[in-house]
Length: 189
Image (cartoon, rainbow, N blue to C red; front, side, top):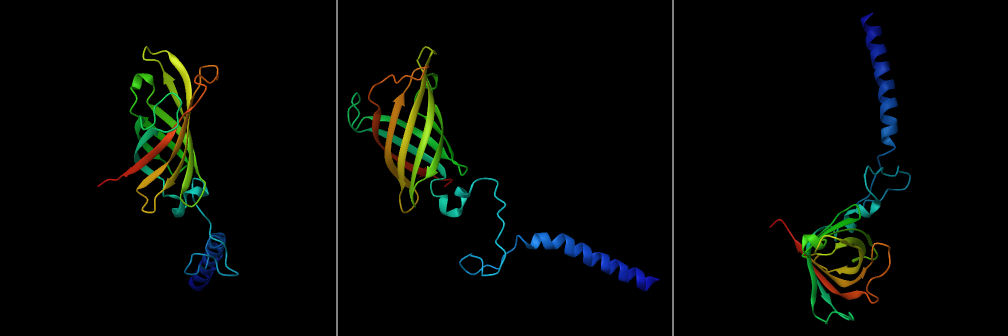
């Protein structure tokens, strides 16, 4: 009886092992040095919780930045005037938050979304809620950026356009504020 129990246990164990491990094997792959599947191998399963934009190749812009916005070509603001300085956090899920140097009572935070448009280029669309100094709302401002990350990954430069709307969605200033920007990475060091 002992022998039959051992055989039965071994048989059940083998069946359980096959039942449990076979689906798991579908997620494994025989990869070559470059990380691509060899012919006939299963494709690897990704367990990411966010979009594919989060591959290591796309992490260049992700991080914490000090950004300066300077007017260039704006109708109402002289060239070379600093429009804003801000701390900006680009997140790996394609979202962004900016803490502007504007007084908090006039609206100092923007929330945005970004996407990669080339090997080192990105575009960002964020919205700021603008307020008068007396606390009454003006409306949303649309801030759009096109930026390029430098080779070292510690500076980005580009252009921006700001359009201010009223509460009904009408453009308040007929010509947008435009200019150039530069972001410098802030690290833990």
